[in-house]
Structure formats: C-alpha cells, structure tokens
Length: 194
Image 1 (cartoon, rainbow, N blue to C red):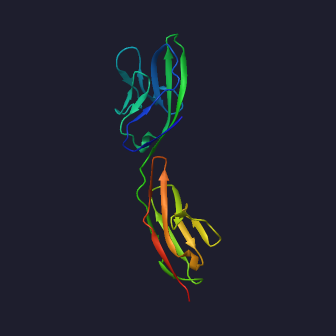
Image 2: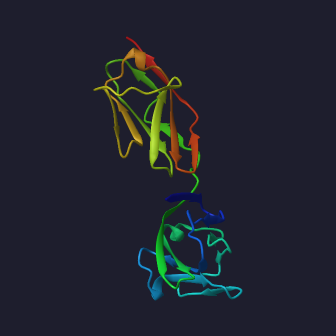
Image 3: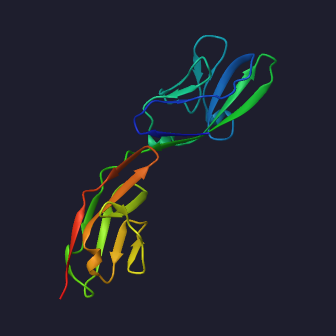
C-alpha cells in the first residue's frame, strides 16, 4: 500500500487486516525489522517505547496504526510493522511506501518572443515549476505535438519551429504531483503574416 502526503501534514499509517489476539506492535523504518530501524513499540503495558529511529513525531495508536506528525521529505520511504500475537508468534506485515511531496507552486510560462513572423521565426516557451508532471495547452485544449511542436527538458520546454499562422493563440502549462495541481496564466502568441 502506498500513501501520499504533503509536507507538514500529519499522516496515519494503518494496518489492514489485523489478526485477532494481538499482544503488541513494532514499527520500523525500512524493509528490515532490525533494532537499528525500530521507530517504536507498543505492547500490553501502557505507553509506547521509542527505538533508534524515533524522532518525537511518531506515535503508535492502540489499533496499531502509526501516526507521524508534521511529515518532512525525509519521512519518505518504506515502513514495516511487526504484529506480536498472544500465541507468541511474530507476523511481519509490510505497510508499504510513504511518499511525501511539496505542494506544487503556480507555474510561470515565459516565451522567447510573443510576436513572430510566419514561416521565419521560431518560439521557445518554458514552464517554470517545481512539479515533475507537466502538460501543455493551446487555447484551453491539450496541445497536440507535431514535427514542428516538440517538448524537451522534461516537458518544461516547448519549441515551435517554424511558426505558422495557426500557432497564434494562448499557451499555458498545467502541473501536478500526487497531492496537488496548478496551472499558469496564458501567454499569447501573435503571428504576423507577410
């Protein structure tokens, strides 16, 4: 199971299908349930006991879930829980991946030129953003790439070469990550025909 969160959020990593007869829980950072990776444990005695990976932001709840307060990018990773059963057997349950993201900022589009001459000039539009997923739009419709319209620099840069009159209009980019999205103001492209 994968969980996505924004920086600063409180996150609860839940255990699915907890077996009956639970005696306690131990949470670990990483795939290996070894002492060095232990965050904390919660048993039948009150309170939880911190381990080497405890940072004062983690808390094991009575249902075995792990609360991480005010997550940071460093909290991204795999978390493993051991469930101790009353029959004294251990059962390892891998929780999965926690992904922490910065919310995307509103992108800005800059153009090398906004007034161009048909069949003579070319234009480069750049979408400045902190996001990894970028889409381009022309007059509010998803931009169709052609031999003249190409993306580069991880889709941040749109090159139109050469410019044709049907390229006149508004261009903007939309950006996203698993927790947020935003779009730029449009940049108008004027094409002069001689």
